[in-house]
Every structure is written in structure tokens, then in C-alpha cells.
Image (cartoon, rainbow, N blue to C red; front, side, top):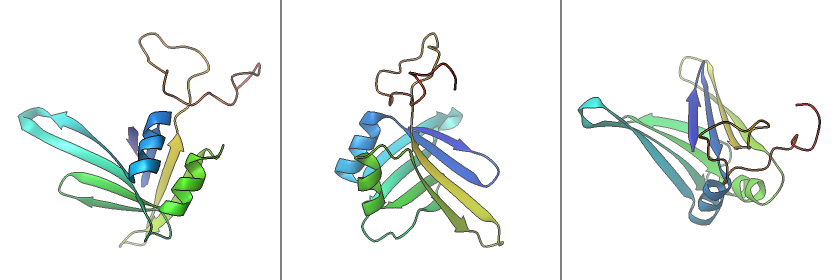
Length: 127
């Protein structure tokens, strides 16, 4: 699972195996270590009680919660992403994007893309 945070936006990209884990178990978690033994944790959850995507931050961890019905539909179809917005306390909006991770159109040295989704533009002459 790859996480990108920028300008009031959270973007998570999941491989085929990770999408399957989320579909089957309802939870996918990852962490990044830092000096001093500290960790930044992030997870995506499928919840039957959720009606729209939402994000939470506590104790150096981000949790993105998605509606279970949306996750099941996304995981079993050609749908690329799940998108949501969450209004913050200051009135700003947090964009939440969870998407399938596609293989690159041009292979990159040292990159294992065996578990990524086939790129939809792979059979065309342009991106």
C-alpha cells in the first residue's frame, strides 16, 4: 500500500493482493519506521457502518474508513477508485482517494510490479 499526503488530500494505492485482503478481512495496515524506534502507521478499513469515506488521525496513525458496500463493488469490478471528501473543523475539505495501483507503462528497473493491476493504457500507443 502506498500513501501520499499533500494539500488536504490523502491518496492510497493498493495492489491486487492488497485489494483482495481488504475485501476479505476488512482491514489493510502498513507502517513506516523512523529513527528512535518511532513508527507512522496507516490503515484502510472496510466498515458496514460507514456511509462515506472518512479519515481519522490519532497517535501517529492515519485510518481511512470506507463503506463496505463500496469496497465490495470496487474490488470486484473494473472501477479504479473510491473518492470522498470530509469537511474539517476549520471548514477546509480533506480529499480522500483510494485507488488500484497500476503497472507503469514503461518498466522501471528494480520495481516489482507483479502484483499491480494491468494498466488500462498498456495496449495503446499513448498514455
